[in-house]
Image (cartoon, rainbow over all chains, first blue to last red):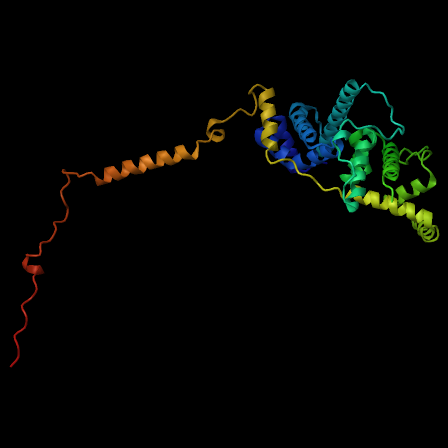
Length: 193
Length: 149
């Protein structure tokens, strides 16, 4: 399942070999960072989160038994950490703002980071739809956003996604479809031609 | 829904389900033909499809972002800090860098020392080859030939 090079790297990681760890970070840093960025929507948060992921790899590598691809295991850590971080930010935001409004649509939620997103007003018309789509992504509830990011941005297969999020493929598809519909509805509500 | 690999489409209207199936390439040839026929005949369906398509194109074209250049160092720093130096300890020879000014000064001192040593007169050394004098007979010019009568 894992290539010979990966198996060697994993053995090195389990022996706490620095070179193996450096190779692991160099190989996966951009992919992990990009997933973190698309889920968190903020570079600084994404960088912190990606660092946490690799620290967790170093810490918990002994629990990797080779039953799945190393990348699947790594992305599972990434998604779990991202969910924890989003929940923490949501709780903090709730405490700070009193948590008065529930989202109208189950698939849409107020992202704790959404305040950082620039509004489309003043953007060039050509970029307006793009801005709204990116904003809409961050408005999706975390379960939907994670799957949309993995499928439509990272281009992973349903099988890989179902292994990463530990759900069956049918549930993954349902969530993805709902996420796409929610995104479309969000854009409909914001983008008036 | 009995098959776990199929999405639960109860919540989706028929149009959304069709768009999703189209996007994932899951329409069989008959369904695809019907889909295209409907696109050609139904302007509302076509307009909704165009919008769905453009949104998904934007999502799929979101640019890939790279981790910062110092990412590896930062992760190693975290591990060093959390393991209290048990892992990824600083290696003085590889981590500590001497400022260029200090290196330049040391080099200048070394070169000056070498220069001084080379220039210093050494009275104990005897020349291996004696310097020829211009007055030695071998080096004197031969007498000019006698003029021929």
